[in-house]
Length: 460
Image (tube, rainbow, N blue to C red; front, side):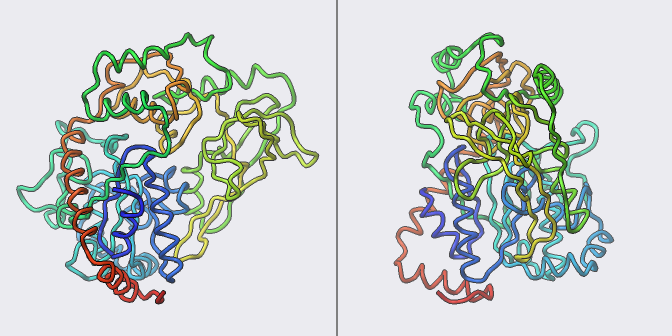
């Protein structure tokens, strides 16, 4: 399915699961839909499963939006308490479109809880209380973090109001929950590729994704094996574990002689919301730089001069103390402080301000999700989770940009249940394409206008 076809379906008000391979344009399509809604005076609720993903889309975590916070279960009392919270109830009642990004990292338990909250607050038996729900993500990427293992405590041991007897799913993915089945979203599987332009690399990534990689694909990857001392110094390094990232960044910064410059993050607005932004922001609260520091931009610039993931080196500071960065492409950029905002009902609820940089000799695979990198040095010998290697490898645009320090068997494995489900998602997307493409243009336009009107929007 193309981005334009998916956008046409979204505009009808249908519940949608927007998916596709890394670089297929999921974020671009969502942004186009958000712009369309706002042009019709409809303000969507933009949320994500993690704080990092939420900062990318100027939204909040779905946990915060729904009021469930860090709860692992919901009782009738909890639902009543959320529904009686005037601020939360108003937010949920006024919402017409709910977007949940990185749904692959949202457990079925949490997905079910959010759905129950929406029904309770909106006093409706319809899925999610009748909201249009747009789910965005790729289940081949990092799976949900499940705190309690099944052998220790049943993962879906919750109140009967959330799960019907005999329907407790066996996997943590959101699509296994009864709420997903009842919602029955139209699957829009994007098939275009806007990140990689290397046919050989695309073949390798496709083989890993389909679980059909062979010795020839592994051989292609191993041609990019290098010794650490021979890896390019200007490329970001990806590691599965935080400890490796912190160690390398601190070690490399100490190697540089010169005066340190410190930049403290500023915040304003609701304290809890500001804290959520801080946790999700890729720039640290206290950024320490020196001339020669390897850095990565952590935010997209509206002017297009840099994007989240652009790599460079600090070459100096302006008279006002602002870092000057030379990108890998040779462009000099004055890295002025930027804002990360959390918006609700079109209004800024909280914001943080920081220089949009972080030390980039190394970052975790988790924090790289959603980025596009020209090159990366990665050590996947410590990969421990399904999808970790696939996420890391798919960050770079070409095989020539990959420098591999190590590799283990788990790094090339995707979740077997995601693999099985993918065939069904592709089939559902093909059916949706056929159905909507056969509809008369006038009928589609009428559906779209009815949805705008029902949502309180303005006519075209």
